[in-house]
Image: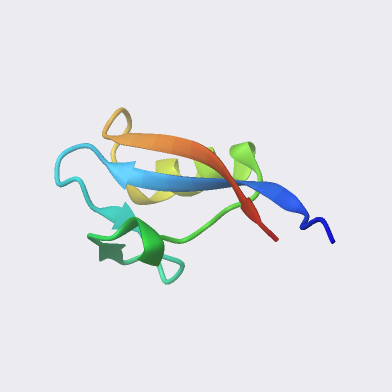
Length: 64
């Protein structure tokens, strides 16, 4: 009856406060942000889509 939980990473632009979506667009709401499940992949995605130092990556746990 236990649910599996996994780490999820989201990317936020420091300048606008918007989150990167799965489609590599931007959204205001955390619930609409794209999830990555590997920190290195999140860092690569952030570096490819935002200027260096202009993003934060946040990790939290959620049900799989």
